[in-house]
Image (cartoon, rainbow, N blue to C red; front, top):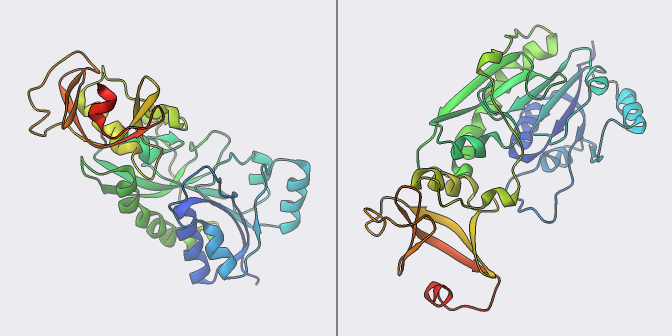
Length: 301
């Protein structure tokens, strides 16, 4: 009997690692549907196209798969099972319905919490101590389908979003490895999500890194670590200049015990800024725009 035909939708390193697992297992992956790398985005991860091309798997990068053309092309592929891992676009029910064994997605949170986009960044921003990966059935609503399996990992209060991502990344591969036999045989056990515990967060834009100095020092610190490099970064504007805050400390000797109006400059060497309940020392600043500067002190003066 021919092996079930798997159509894989994916991006990011989660997509790369999940697809690599299938190829290492010898599963019958018929194609990868993914995204073209955005030239305006820092590509700091391994995209799944690398794994696909190494094994001669066809790679497709449509803007949308819900068009009549792509509906017909996917139907011609005759997928038995659809798997998705960090694919950035919603996949319509007509496409999902083409796979008789169902369609399942790997999501970067412990569902039902943190449905939606950028779940790890949001979890770090909100100071969560634990994150995870969840394999779930794909339905019309984003990340709302029944859970097949999930695995979590603890993260530290100073972890950046990338560090948190690196800690949780192996969970995706382990979860998928545990469940592939059941998925291919159509016997995966599913548990409905508890809607009373569900939370949803939307995608994040570079503008969402703007610092609100009326927030507490902890809230601003969590924003900084949630969007620091390789993400677009936290920032604040001063005239024509923009200060990128790549790291800050709220418990440093320069910041402890300092108070002022939110956003007030309390010191320039080191650079200390007042928050809603104290102060932050900006330990990794970067000035952008405005007149050429030699130091933070010159800009502030």
